[in-house]
Length: 88
Image (cartoon, rainbow, N blue to C red):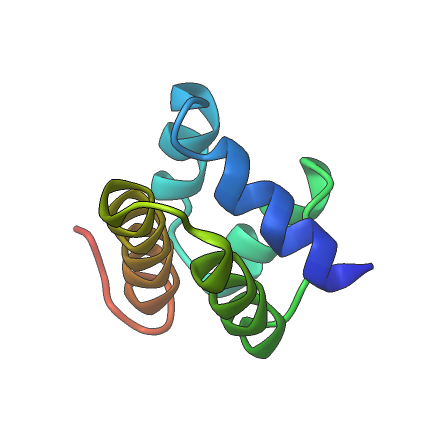
């Protein structure tokens, strides 16, 4: 089920501006994890990457692939920025 949670996040994050803003507002990895959990997304980074690969092979156009990779890159940036980087 965690991989499905990651798939669901990738499928909805593009249209859910409030969720993007909430995730981006997290200031550390614990807060990010709690925010994801509160919104029904429980998965590891490895499961996220597996979900990304699974969705990528299902893409039928270059635009679909580009959009998916853009969302996945954004989420990875948020994860990395919450693992030690300060936004002060």
